[in-house]
Image 1 (cartoon, helix red, strand yellow):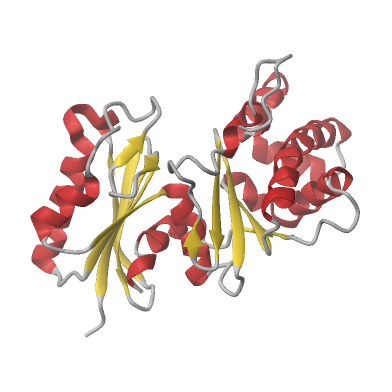
Image 2 (cartoon, one colour):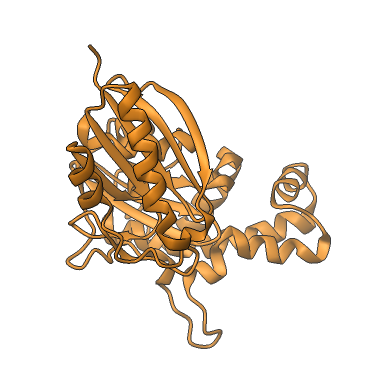
Length: 285
């Protein structure tokens, strides 16, 4: 019988879940609200959903992709204000003790990269770095199958690099897609529409996106020079802009990296909303 695993993806507002078999087929998907983790609601939901699935299926393990920094013990080491009261939640310990199953808990950007490693654009490479562009910017580094998270699990906090004292801003405050949205707000244009018009030759929107891409490229150039990965995976909703975005980022990065030192290839994340679910169970397959 094919092995089956229950996978979760915990975000700030929703918990997505699904059953994943050893061939990476996903079924029985669903999602529930986090209710801002009121009274430890997230762990209660993880427990309730696992209990339901265990009654109806033979489970071989549980994987949890989650926002926040995850410690080596599978507990939440740090969580931002988007998930109140989440810090210190002992997800791995609680689920293992209750269900007597192996449990893997991993940060969501790490999970996205692990998913791309087993079934996406990073499948056949030895080293890959993933940058998730969203309301914030997250990073993950996978080298020869090992996640590099640093001595205190704080490595790859790329959103906080490139601090600028003059503007009192970090990298993600200048390069997140939220910043691009703010830059477009005076024009009453969405990010998607702005990209469409830029592709169509409208210089106003092309220039706004170019300025934003320049800021994004500054962080990516630092990552290439520090880690020299085989592939740099670009994730987040804006990655759906595909080659148009990749070509723009490559152009700006080429100006920031000395000639001959830019060997890393840029790639768009392939698995979209499946990446975290697959990454969550990656240690079992």
